[in-house]
Image (cartoon, rainbow, N blue to C red; front, side, top):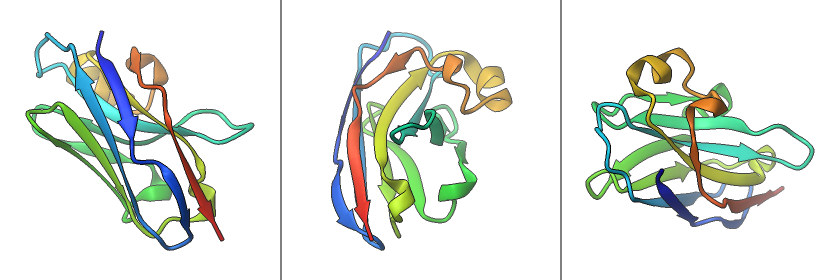
Length: 131
């Protein structure tokens, strides 16, 4: 298991920007199998994938709704995950969660946003975008 702690959420007006951070600790497996992602859940809606990155090689995958606006990245020897969110919209309002998985490239490429591929989750950070 990996421990994940998110930060950086807040309230912003439409068109504004926020950067979310997620610090990971405790992973002792191979980075050939490791991937991390951002998910979000709005009230009354299911949790959905926003962006994910495979740590070996840095391949990324985005939800269509955030392409061109959000950027996922890794730093600090793969211990810190970021989500740069630009041109925010009211529909981006949600609780944002950091998640980590260890299923390898086959799992990630076949189902990058499948919740079952991510056994470790953070507590979430709230993002509110007002119009």
